[in-house]
Length: 561
Ligand SMILES: Cc1ncc(C[n+]2csc(CCOP(=O)(O)OP(=O)(O)O)c2C)c(N)n1
Ligand SMILES: [Mg+2]
View 1 (cartoon, rainbow, N blue to C red):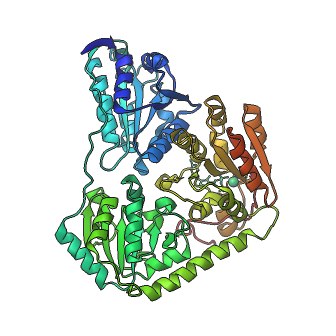
View 2 (view 1 turned 180 degrees about the vertical axis):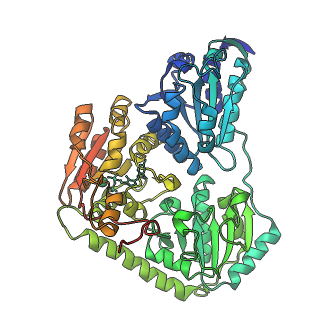
């Protein structure tokens, strides 16, 4: 026990949890924590320009390090309201984030005092848990519990609200030396169930692995590859998780469903057994129909959350467990096939050809050399120059959506996507968070001109905190994903669909970073190489073909007659 100011105790609790990076936007509700951070030379503080962007940074930090990102929303009320979309994105990505925010003082709470809103209710649907500290001496305990909660089971953002007067109190603080998380053995699977799975695999003719985020959260990428290689099973991935396996691995079929490719989708469509590892089989991949997941296919589903099992599709075997650990257990129970006796050899030979053709087709499209640039050319140049361990972040616009399955994800994790939140204005901020998480890796953030406009204020954050991410802004002059519907379904009656985009590379230069402009083949690759060499915060403004947009949600619109 030691007597100290509550703000200092809060920072000590964060340190005890293992926190060394904090994103935040200050406000008078939390000044005591800020004052304590002044002396915390072991903590890097990244001040942001908008709470929502700060949340995206902490979210990406959480996804890349697989430990909670921390965001201090300094101002109760407006600051808190500003960060709700970021909370939603983290919640839907099951991303661990610890959020600290203020509340009005306890003497005034509930009186509709200045900047007061029912924050608890505001945060509830967009967080994993909302906690309100009621006694100052419990601040450290709440922070440690929130950290643990964010990072356990189905991960997610946890908000701790602290009434402002509590932070000004002196408390007797009792902070455990190592207050983070106990090591917990991953939940795996019993022998009898393994034997059932073995029987299902040996009885199948066209089995496929379908892997999702659970593989990433469980650090199960190596286990996934071992399973696939031993059984010679193609790997398909769920939407936004291109990085479950190296993009160039011969067994990696890539993304299934509308955000993926025809080869992976075809494999699933024709499968009779699906090993669904670390995935809910969610909407963005399956649309909850039998278009991608055949009604007759047997499903072995593994997810950390028992509620996810059999939720959208009936399962033959459901395992509430760690996807990587279960993949290892399955690998161990299976005997290797004798050379040349892989039961699905013919299917795999066709798959290998189709896969090769898919990549050839992509490069052919890219190589047209057209001006304005086709986004495919941009992706192809990215594939040529991005380092093997590059990290990518993307937005929800049409140019990014089309890129999802084509990025050169060489290691796991290497893709941070908006996933089910589907928001634009995510990628740039997420890239800054990713770069703070992994400064040694090249971070390349793809986005449209509309999405970048939403977060362009964070260019100053990048320069001020020297976060050398590279933004690849694809300028088609429109809210491309939406104008596509007006083109395809509303007789080109364009309204609200155009955006004015200044030369963002020039704006970045004004902010103190570096900027590049690309309009012709080869120039994106040159700019990327140059930006990586210079190692400064960078924006590459790429002029892309305004016609290269596609109506994505064809289930959501009907052709006018
Ligand atoms: C926060 C948010 N606002 C609006 C939308 C709807 N929306 C989806 S894509 C899109 C257009 C994106 O334009 P841009 O960022 O330029 O990318 P492009 O589609 O042109 O590649 C819009 C407005 C959204 N998904 N998220
Ligand atoms: Mg656009």
